[in-house]
Length: 173
Image 1 (spheres, rainbow, N blue to C red):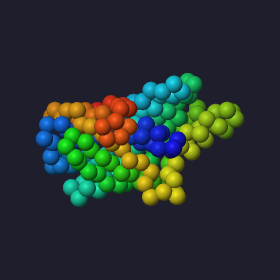
Image 2: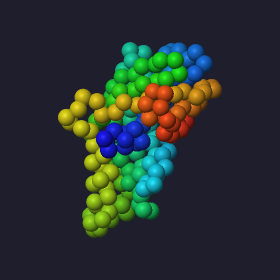
Image 3: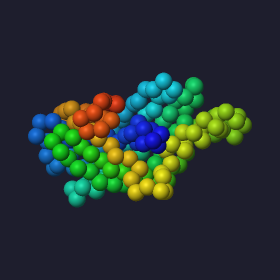
């Protein structure tokens, strides 16, 4: 359960569809998407390079930043999967690749010298790491709010027709 929520928050990969008769041809391609999530405990930002292929396969080069207690933790993680467009709703099914820490040198030093920082980093990493016991690491549901020029704005939903979780801005590459 915790993995599912954080994957939705962090690996919440950007939507690529739109409400006004958007076609698959319009969303197929490569996008740079940024999403920020605010919670009681942390702020998470995703900076994703998402490619939606015409054959409905998808790939993502994800960069994740967590800000917790004035500390910033950074990770990279590729994901692979498939996508489906239904009206203005884009569904992405992801299988995550290996999680790689990409922390700044100051954070790396704190992780090695401070037990509480090390524990916090391990908590975040445990949530983001792929689950070898499942076939799918995340099912992401996105609603396209607009596509204007090379910019797409979307909303991540908890589930199809469900509550909103975050806003994303994507730029076509």
